[in-house]
Image (cartoon, rainbow, N blue to C red):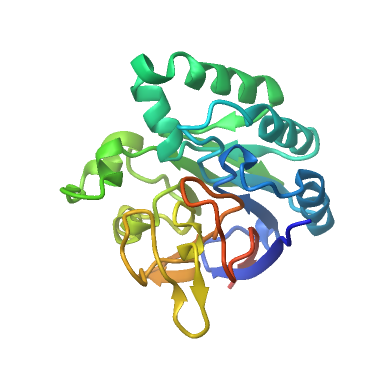
Length: 265
């Protein structure tokens, strides 16, 4: 049975309402149809053991070049949604399957329908107000264009790009689900207090003291490879993911569940 690690982060903010002090959030990313073959039963048990208040899924449930496996992953999310609010935003694999219908047919629509039936709240360029004891925080899901995942000729992200998709952030504490961590500076400039990201799979291979070796655009020793990052008043928790695609290996890089514990400073 493949090892799964749980990384726990304490996140502090003066903006966090008192009712949310101590709240736990479990974050999953990059399951990729579970081609890598972790025990989803074990993962479920690890999440339940953490006693989170809600679950964030930061994209890439499926693998665009893989034709099956989503049912198993959706089944996991249904079990979680029976216990907790579960919020999902697309990763680049969902976006490409959605855009290239001539190649992938109605696979995207089938996945979205299955997630909705499972009770998962889909936040593709949308948001919800999450209320507790008369106070609230905002949870946003960002889906950026496929061009921002290009290996070559990737465009820069204009200042008003994010607000053009999801508007300006509302007053109060805001959580942003944004699959691609490479634009963390833009997320922070937009006004996100806490960002959940994935995409980079921890750098595929991790070396002592050096970290991740390679990201999906083939950058060696990328700055964003996994862990906690800060930019202005924003924090990003970058999950190392739970699966693989294309390069079906993870060396010194076990699949990772992320648990965030929010604290009012």
